[in-house]
Image 1: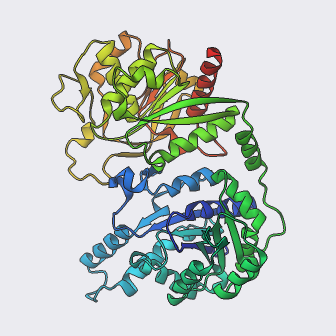
Image 2: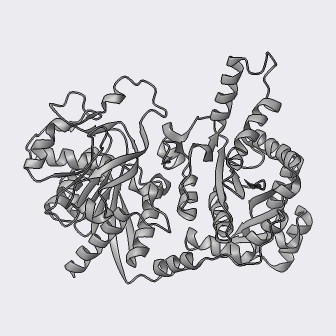
Image 3: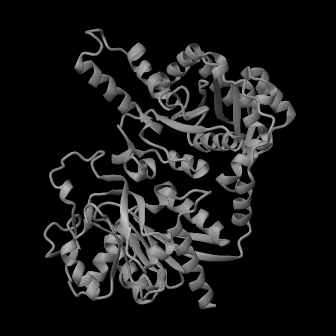
Length: 539
C-alpha cells in the first residue's frame, strides 16, 4: 500500500481566518476526486481537551463517537466530508506534554534529560502520522492552530519542518493562510503583513508551498505576481479566498482557484478527472433557493457567541435545505425570559429549540419558555439540558410537583426529577469524565422518534452527567408524557415527547453533532418540517 501524503495548514497575520474551513474545503475536493482524506487539528493551548473550557472562550465542545471532547473544527470536518472523526483527530499541547511526562515517569527515556527537542517534537510527529499509519487514507490534512510567530506554535512548526525532512518534500505540502488587508484611506490592498508572516515561517525553516489569501476584494494579477515573487511561491500557488455568503461556498471557490490541483501537483498525485461535486451543488441550490421561511428561537445561555452553538446552527442549515426552507434562527438569552414576558418574546416564533448547557444560570427562563410553547402548541425541540428543563417544567406545572428540579441546580429539591447518574457520583475530576460518545437507544414503536428515524434502535452521541430520574417515570406517563427512547443497557430515558402536541420532543443526546451536508440529521429535518407546517397554518 502506498504511503499517505501529508498537507499542513498554518495561519498568519491574525487568528480566525478560517483555517478549519480551508482545510475542510480542500479535503472535500480531494475526496470528490476519489481520494480517501482525513483532517486533524493540533491546538497549541495547554488544556488537555476543550471539555473544561468556557464556551465564551472557545466556542462549543464537539464530541466524537469514541467520546473525545474536541475542538469545534472537527465538526466542520465531519459536516463537509461525512466521515467520522475520533480522539486521534484532535491533539492539544496539554495532551502532548501529558504523554511525554507519563513516558518520563515510566522511565521510557532511560534517564535522559527530557527536552522540547527532540522529545516534544517527536511526540508531535508521532501523533501527526498516527492516522496516516492506519492505511485508510491517501491524504492526511493537519491544521495547526494559532498563528505563526506565537510562542505556543513553535514546537508544532518545528515538528512540521522535521517531518518534511523525514518524509521528503514530495510527500508534504505546507499551505499558509494569511490576510491581505484593505486600507480604505489608501484605497488599496496591502501585501506587507503577508510578506512578514511568510518571512516568520521561513525563519522557522519552512517555505510555504501554497499561499491562501483571505481578502475582501479580488486580487489583481499584479498583486498575485508580487505575492509570488516576495513570498517565494509559484504564481499558480497564490490562491485568493474571498469572503463567502456561506461556508459551504468555499469548496467551490477553492476549486475555481485551483487549490486542489496545485496541491496534487506538489504531491505528485496529479488527477485528470474533475471532482464530483454534484450532491454538494444540489445542497447549495436548495439552501440558496428556499420556497418558504420560518423563524426558530434558539434559547440558551451562551447566545452572544455564535460558535457556542455552532453544530446546532449548521444542523438547521442542513435541515432547512432538505425541506427547501430558509431557517432564520433568533438567539434568545435564557436569563432574559421571565414568566411575564415569555409571551412577548416567543408568541411570534414558528418553533423553539432549547439548547444544551451547564449550571443554574438562566434555567428559569428556559422553563418559562417551555411552558409557553407547550401550552400554546408551538413546535418544541429540547437537547440535553433542554430535555431536562422540559421534564422539570412538566413536573412543576402538570404533575404539580411545585419544587421539582434537577439536583445540578438544587441538591435539596424534594422532587429530583433529574438526578446525577449513578456512575458519576464518586467522580471528582471534571475533565473527560462525563457520559461521552455514542450510546445505543431503543425507540418505542408508534412515536415521533420511531417515525422520524424509521427504525427501532439508534446510536447517538452524549455529553452529560445528569439523567431523568426513573422513579418518577410512571407519574409522567400517567399524565401523557412518553419516554420514547431508552438506553438498552442502563434503562436511562434518552428521549421524551408529548404525542398530543404539534411536535414536542426532548432528547438527552446531541443529534446536532451527527448532522452533515450529505446526511442532515432526521430529528432536525422533522423539526423544521413541523415548524414549517405550523408557520403555514398561521397564515
